[in-house]
Length: 278
Image (cartoon, rainbow, N blue to C red; front, side):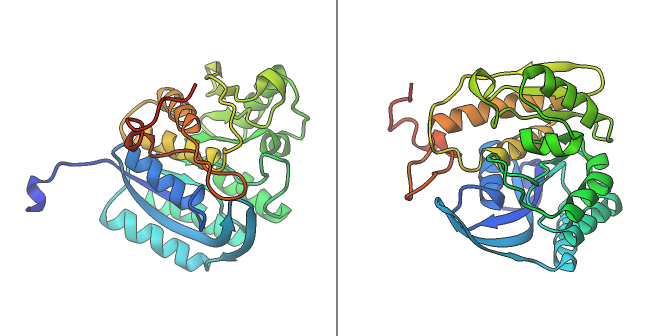
């Protein structure tokens, strides 16, 4: 069929690492884009050997390779939104920030992958400093988890009020909007997120899903926000829709492997075959 007869489709770009287990990273992002009827493109930053039990090895790509992937996609196809995930080291972070500027990327969702939901630091302090100064100010929406928000603010976060304070403090670092995620919070704050865009301070909450299979939720959320931005939704609307998508994907989480399985990104494909989980 000639290209002129094909329907136009929004395009999103993910700049992140590969998860060989398929639950997070590039793989989760591309599935999420597809669910939203957005064409997914990618720039790989690193390759991991991992499964549901954990990460066994990580190999970084050269920064020049990351830059080349971004340029190849944007200069030919163009993108309506982009997201970053695991950028791994200072050189890659600096390169991505330079390319965001050079290529004029807008609707940029930054998942500042610095600390896992359990509190383990994933990148070194030099990389964190570069992320803070070079990339975060370019964010349309920044999505730190509790521990990342603590690093960015220097404060302990244990209460809803502290989450709200953190969102406002982080916003001052340059991101247009901040979503402090509550997945790592305790008790009834688990899954409660706080949004601040300089004007609106909102508490975003969806139903809590009790499942051990939550691998990839952070990647999936930021990818869903990017997809909704690519579709033309305003930032807060995009974020609310993304939270709804993740909640349903958690209800259909996949019990695969011997450890923590991933969320069910493609739940519509089998939802007619299985009863809707309670």
